[in-house]
Structures are given as C-alpha cells and as structure tokens.
Length: 309
Length: 297
Image (cartoon, rainbow over all chains, first blue to last red; front, top):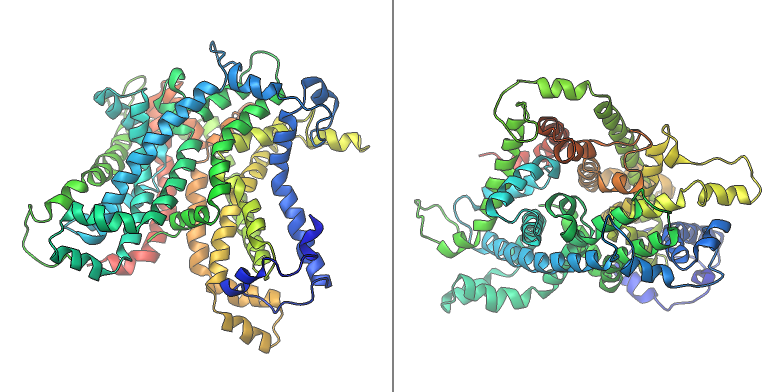
C-alpha cells in the first residue's frame, strides 16, 4: 500500500496530458505528499473494508465467527458457506439456494438489456435524425418522467400487465425494465447520434438509404462504444434492481436480489453469518466484474446518465 | 436536418414514427397515464381493489395523522438532508484530493466508486453485518479493551437512521466524487495560474473562485441526489427492515406495504402522490432555471 510515494514515473504520462489542475508538482517525499497519499490510503482502506469483511466472513466457519473478530482473516479457510449459499440455503419452502435466483436474474437481465437497448437506440436515432412534429414533446415528457418516483406508477402497471396476461412472469418484468430504462438510454443515444456529422447522414440519404438502412449500416457500426456504455449501465442497473423484482414477480421467478434479502433476513432458523455473506458476495459478483472490467466506460455511463440535456 | 415548418403530413417520416411508438406509449401511458391514474384513485376509498367511491381528501388526512407516516417523513428529512450535505462535502473533498496531480488516480477512483456498482441490498446487508452489536464494530472495539464502548445503531431506535446513513454514504459518495471531478476538470487552468500569481491560498481559491464557478455541476448533482433520496427503499428493507419497531421507516416502504401487504390501496396511492409532490417541488424550480428561458414559445 505504501508503494505510492516510492515508485517513480510509471503511470504519470497519461495523467499529465489529461490535465489535472491544481498546484505544480513538488518532490515526491515532501510533507504535502505524505499527508496527501496518507489521507487517500486511509480513505481507500475505509471504502474497501466492507468488501474485505464480506470475503473474510464468507471463508470462516461458524465457530470461528462466534469467537473472533469480523476483521480478522480466517484461520481455517472453508468454502462450505459458498457451496451452501449457492445450492442449499432456504427461502420459505425452497431449499435450492441462490442458484435459482441467479438463473432467474440471468433470464431477466439478458432479454431486458437487449430489448431496452434495441428500442432506445432506434428511438434516439429517430429523435436525432428524423424529427417529426411532436417528437421533442414526447422526449421531454420521457425525461421529466424519469424523475417521477416509481412508487407512483407501480400499481397501475400491475393492472396493465395483468390485462396483458404477463403479470408475475419474467416477460412482465422484462417489459417493466424496458420501460424504465428508456429515458436514460434514449437520452444517451440521442445525444450521441446528434454529434455524428450531418454530412454522413446526408450522403447516405442521397445514395438512397432509408430510415432502417442508415441505422443498420452507418449509425450502428459507428456507435459501438456508446452501445457498450449502455450495456454496462443496463446490466448493473437491472441486476441490482429490487423493487420491480419484488412487485412484478412471484417467489418462483424472484430475481437474485430479492431472494438474497429473503435468505438473509429470514426470521426462522439459526443465523449463519458466513453463508449470508457468501450469498451477498455472490449476488454482488456480476456487477462488480462488469465494473472492474469496464473501468472508464462505467464512469462514462454514469456521467452520461447524470448530466442531462 | 429533417425538420422544417411544413403543413401536417401524417405519413411523412413514417418509419421514424413507427420506431418511436414505444417511446410515445411509455411517455403517454406510463408516465402521464399511470401517474394521473394513481392521483385520481388517491381520492377514493379503495381497499383491496381500486374503486371509484370518492372521499375527497380523507386518505390524505388519515395519512398525515398516521404515526408511521410521520416517522417516515421525519426519517426522510434527517436522512435526506444529512446525506445531501455529507455527500456533497465528502464528494467534493475526494474530488479535490484526486485532482492534485496524484499518481494512481485511476486506482483510487476505482476503489472509491466500486460501491456504486453494488445493489442497495448488498450494501444494506454488509453494513448490517459490520454494525452487528455482537460481532461487528462494537464488539471489536470492546475486545480491544474499551469495555464500555457502545455503538449499536441498528438496534437503537434513536440513532438507527444514522446507521442507514453510513451505508448510504459509503455507496453514494463515489458517484458525487466522479461528477465533481468532471466539474473540476472543466475549470480553466488559467484560473489556477491567476490565483497563484495573486498569491491566493489554495483553499481560498476553491472556496471563493472554483466552487462558485461549478454552480451548474452542484445543481445537477443536488437534483440527482435528492431524486434518489426520495426513492430510498431497498437499503432500508435490507439493512433494518424498517426497525427497530417503526424507527427507520421511509415513505417508499410505507407505499409498498400499504399497496401490496395491508391491502389498503387508497393509503398507498395518497402516500405515493405525496412523494410525487416532494419530487415536483425540487424538480420544477430546477427545470425552470435550466430550461425555462429556452422552452417558451
């Protein structure tokens, strides 16, 4: 951890050109640097602590947890809690572990990500390049609609889904995720397509390409980075959802987050903290992997989501 | 561009209109239709099923005389204001630290932001474990020899909301830091040079020059944080379940419980309409400031 103030020049090239502001750099081991890096390391340790506690607890046996300190590393490493969390932990009458919730979440996330992005990218494209009377009004409603608390709309949507015959099924939940992903994704794609040079669009028009032709052959291949940003945004958002899962699915089709909460906060039986932490970490694994692999693209996604208009 | 002032032609641009059907339906049916539906039925005596027997403001009167709702609102105010203040301060300080031409900036940023990628359920459960009185921070500090040490927010009704706040800040400050960092990078370097030439200390430059210049970033961040705070639900469900007793209830949980568990739809609708009012009070003035001038006409 203390290597930060010793190693010279191995990562600094990118930083200087990307232009951080602030005062001029000074010698490495100055008092200012020790305070600066010391503070940063303390903060980083604080932010990492819960992750560390989760991992450490999940690798201990119950007797060790009862005796010891939650911050101590495991004396005897055991993977039993992970196995139990995955395959045997009970929610209500079912005792097949988190695996069911995991596969439900996969079956919810994959179609939701694909459908919501397909729809939103075409919407954004229409808004950017093929404006029609009223298109901006609908877009404004969409953006302001994203501020409405979900609680206001959840019940009428139950009725709509029931009328469509998909209430309680995974299909219903996929529709809900598509709807609520639409404002942010449409904004993301619209802003991206607006920045594509107009000449390109005009040239394609002159060559006789139509709405779908331009979308599929020009816009789609050009905008792969923004699709990746959208995919990251949607995978983490949908995987982490709890409210829609608990409202629109039944116990058999509960996504992982709902099942996790039921396992850990169930009142029956002896609390097995190691199994609970193993289950928690397994649930967090998918978004964490996406996050650590995507790096800067994740930041771009949230920045795009944050800076509206 | 494809827009111009022409007479109404319903079949012009037909493909674009077909492609926009999902967006139009979402805007009209979900965002406008469902919202009006809920507000309409909040004035009825709906119990198990929505019914159109009007009772005026009865549901709202009952709502504001229910202790659980008052506790929820009080919690939301405490949690909301503290979480707003602390996440702005911490987020800004972290961003300023990361902006000091440091090495390993990406590593530090990755560490500070990773909680944001996690579900509120995961965050709530981890902090429930860390704050567990028998095994967590309290027992560890007592084990170090300080026998009388007491820090047990999750089972103490007076301070439980601060336990939730600790978890909420851990998850949310990374996002604020990122937004602030983007804002700081948008400040012209000449400002810094000029301040240095004039011999203004760094903290003064931040306080009197940089922060006022970052006003739009602050406003956007505040709107994002507040609209998230009003929705806070998962975190409380996972970390405390609203307990001990009703000490950590929040409005979103009140809505869910009345709609789907107590089968008292009218109350749920009235409570959710109040949430909408809260958001509107924040978003409408902001939207007016941001877009008001442009959108008219």
